[in-house]
Image 1 (cartoon, rainbow, N blue to C red):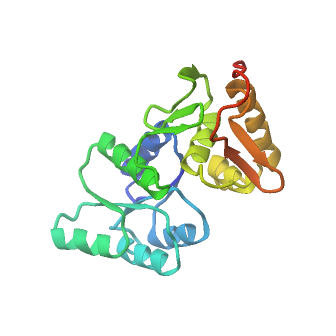
Image 2 (cartoon, rainbow, N blue to C red):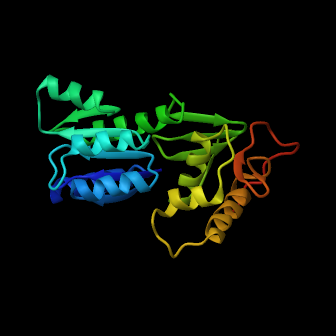
Image 3 (tube, rainbow, N blue to C red):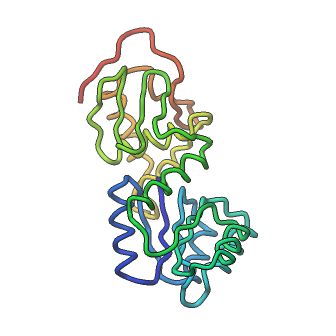
Length: 229
């Protein structure tokens, strides 16, 4: 899951980045409205955490421009402004949730996860697809109830497929959500992770539609899962 933090206060930005990374997000951070407008309008994010009090371009204007340009990423607004009229203005501009400062980081993470699930049409933190169970809160995966030892990259890939279970996910899309704007990564990096996952999870869990991408298999395979590294 790929997240963009838009916050001009370095200490708060660092705390947000640390918390979201610990929650399994691939995080990018910018500190002004102009840069945020460009990033949100040209990159695809699963979540945007947006402060309203920004230099160069205020957060509300950034949000309105994103929505006018077709950006559909879930946006969680952070602000020290407490008036209910400003909260309404933010929601009306296209925000998906609103969290006033100061806030507990645990609440922000809970709201962030809920926004990502809702954006994917998934209300539950536990996703069941065939024999695979993915717990988005605990960042764990299991086959037939047996926990699987996944690396953070492996879990991010499985979680993204689970949240997008109703469609084929292209390797280029997975690459972007696993590594962000790291241009040094190539598609064979995704193939290598999928290969490792198939060894760990067993057959009939991650399917391939050649020329299109990957998906999670809804039904059980013919035989038992082969568990191993």
